[in-house]
Image 1 (spheres, rainbow, N blue to C red):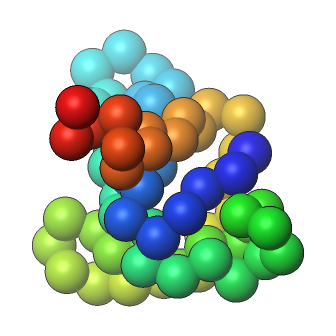
Image 2: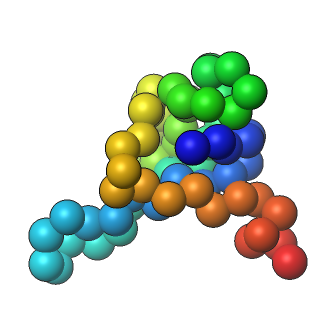
Length: 65
């Protein structure tokens, strides 16, 4: 998984009825776009995240096209 600042990480819900959680990458801590990432949640708090297999990267360029 590789992400850049401004990309969004979408963590898919694992049980029926659980919504996807979307975070914005505000800093790439790993080398060459690799995790961990500092992310900002929709409510404004920030955390360090190393996404698992249930997470998808939406690249910033793809969203603006």
